[in-house]
Image 1 (cartoon, rainbow, N blue to C red):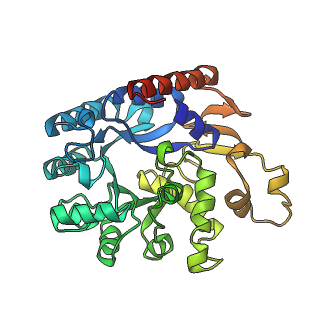
Image 2: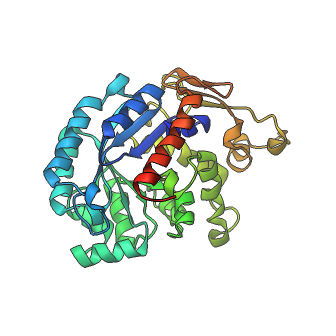
Length: 340
């Protein structure tokens, strides 16, 4: 609820989200209650030394719980909620699990969301275990297709870029998280030149501290300029990644992601009448949004035709309940972890 509140306040209407291993049904309940549009699934982890024992699943249990959640939530509220199988990444998933995810994704015609090639250490482990690089391995298992969404994709070689392009795989670029974790800078301009489908994400609050698309748009543009020159990643390109690019990743580009007659009413209304967004005369409005606007400029958020925030007042989330509950929850967790 805390995360969704932050997203709605910053004008985000649709998320691709990887939930927890356990108690995932409660996350879907929060998604249903708040009105946000979501492609989501429980995280799947059935191997790996880095996975805590309490979070490591048995392969069958991980698959069965995922299917149970899919059958309960996929298509909820006229399709506002969709399910995605969500293996965390190759390191924490057995080959049996990944092969079965491929089959289930095809059977139910739903997306697969995982992380890949985020850092060099991860790639070394995958190569040592499989003899292949991340994307090559996923392609070997039959997962590389138009239903696959890969977060990060910082360290790709030429063969992996070719596979992503040829198979129609979608990439979610997460600049804020990549910088905070010192993972690297994705070759986004090159991917776009290769006509790879690239959208924008924030990854998660624990490795970013923000779920703010305005911040991600600005970062996505700025971090490439020292490498590729000041005109690289212009405002129009970045804005498309944050809007129609995201819609394309979830397979809804004909329904959301742009303002067109017949599309669903997923809108963020901004008030740019302020010091940091002026002058406005003869200035490209997209440039003002990408380089000057902030989430504080979002006045109203509408999702699926429903007003979920109006004049900065939340309609579906009670801030006076959620914020104290968030503090209570973190205190409980710190106590259980024996941390102060």
